[in-house]
Image (cartoon, rainbow, N blue to C red; front, side, top):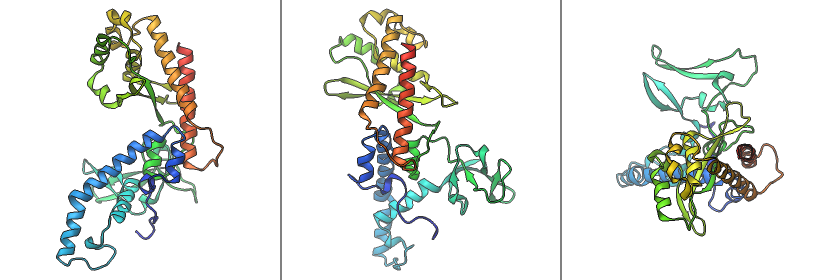
Length: 318
């Protein structure tokens, strides 16, 4: 434990209105990192209020606190955030006796991240020895750094949980603001558009009202396996097609649910809308010259690359 870093790791250690948030707000990853940060903070606050603080109060009332750093009665909110950040940044989700368990494994928790466990090492549990093993996936040369894969995580999650970002991260995902219809459209068109959205899609698109723009959804895009071209999952393509429908498209609207273009004209409008959304994201992001190893700028550059790929895809399709 003495070898663990003292500052709080990830976005839980950032101060509200601080330099990190100011710089992040100028780029493309601001909303995603804030969402993760707010989820982590809400989880920490709920656990503190419902479990930790009552335990601290009981320990203090019963005279259980010894004043030692590990005593329950001496636990504070700041120390609780620090402990949570260590779990978020160091715990592994492992299969133990055929069950998924979250575990902090001494020494292994100090290993850095690699994009794939096939590139270095992986961790497994040996039931016969009741022990964790670090297994080399490839021949390891003397003096080489041992690494493990933290999972297929985009740079927003890496930055929020671990405090770093990777250049050319193929797991990156980018949420684009997409107008979902027009503020002045007929109500029957709005009703058909909403009725066509499957419930699982509604839960992930963050549909919201924006003054002057009407309904806006978040359309998520990602890279292909080679990180060469941008891709849309089927549900995101459905969202894109539904977003541009007009009254003349209603007779053929069910084609969208079948994964087909509603019409040639509607398809052109859909890809044009995506191109506009990508261009707007790029315009809103301030281009900055910064050190290559600065995590916030690495995040912004990697998402700008993905936004550029989306714009190329949309221009080709429309």
